[in-house]
Amino acid sequence: MAQILLHGTLHVTIFEVDRLHGDGGGGGGHFFRKVRVGRTRMIENEPNNPKWYESCHLYCAHMASNVIFTVKDDNPVGATLIARAYVPVHELLEGEEVDSIFYVSRDRNWAHGIRSSKYPGVPYTFFAQRTGCRVSLYQDAPVPDKFILKIPQSGEKNYEPHRGWEDVFDVITNAKHLIYITGWSVYTEIALARDLRRQKSGEDITLGELLKKRASEGIKVLLLVWDDRTSVGLLKKDGLMATHDEETEIYFQGTDVHCVLCTHNPDNGGSIIQDMQISTMFTHHQKIVVVDSDMRGGRSQKRRIPYFTESALTKGGPRESWHNIHSRLEGPIAWDVLFNSEQRWKKQGGKNILLNLRELDDIIPPSPVMFPDDRETWNVQLFRSIDGGAAFGFPESPEEAARAAVLAGIAKISSLNFEDIGALHLKIEAGERFTVYIIVPMWPEGIPESASVQAILDWQRRTMEMMYKDVIQALQAKGIEENPRNYFTFFCLGNRETKKSGEYEPSE
Image: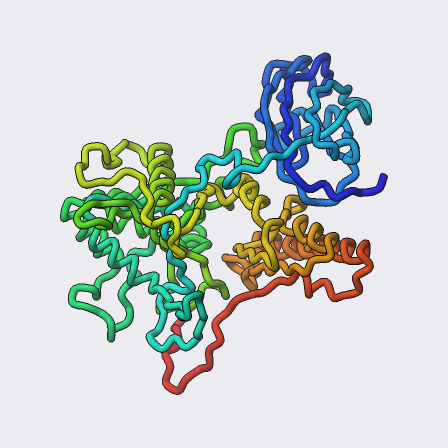
């Protein structure tokens, strides 16, 4: 059957299966149903009549002949296919709601389609879109005084780069009530105020010293740091990713700083192999600093500022040829980041020692910090997770862009769900010029020759091939003879540097 571009949102509600027979042997089966990239919970002790009653909202932007429903019986390792049903894509294009029953052992018994509505912001997410926010973007942690690149802005002004490290130092120093940090890594020996020509009195201290100082002054300082399970003496004390998590925990023992190492635990329902893989290879990758700051003449609001680790002097840097994209969020969106941090602490931080903000008279509740007609006002929406669930947040925007979409990430790996390419299909079909720029590191984090890094590189190559194939097919269907890289291209970032006479060289 010919493939059709399926672009939009599938709203699927799965009810139950009647008279289902699996081959899992004695006892109740662990059935689950799968819809494209969506997945339901596991159903136990219902071998013949599993009931789900769950809804899925699935973003689609790829070529397909059928939407495939599968029912599987979960095993300790892997799963056994029980039944499968095919819904032809051409039957899902009328935009009408369907309420139907079909036999999962047969190919076709579905009806008339889907309907997609437009909402402000991305729907079906934990946090809604916030208005009246201020966003400051950082291109690098430190920025030299002689930054020469002139970037014009509206109003005949040039962009003035923000200094990430110095802003982090300032807000931590000036916090009145709380400092919450959630990090992939928190390295206590890092120095935030590095430019000696700009350094003020008292700024020549490390991050660890600064946090201990603020905690001793009565500020609530909480650190939630990813627990790298490879940071053991048998492998490598600071972990295969050099996160220094064990060192950070020991550093703050006996101080007023509350530091907790938290593992990335798998969800219920995974196999033994999946659980081991997730707990050892998947990280808590959020890098957040949340503080209260004086915004309106003695009144406090929340600010969220980026935080990320830096390489040590002995090993040089950068850790990889990559620029993390970070931002400073102020206004209602900062409260969402605070709530995210509080929820994580309640889940994995142990005892509840979070600051009760309702007891503080000088804390302003969530409110805009910018006027609606201000050119600098932002609408911002927070997506909590970095896994596949977060990807659902992105499809709303690429097809609405006029000329280009820019995407950046630590790695690009997927078999489906690259909605930016689906948006590009629509632009090509409409005869509109559109380009997608994707920025990835030259190599992933970790030891280059290790199995995990090599696997990432292999799957990233396969993903790139798949995406280029889709673009080429769209161009050929339109009769356009152009290089697909004019429409879709990858870039790797790095620093352009030349070695200077007498320049310091790392010992390792």
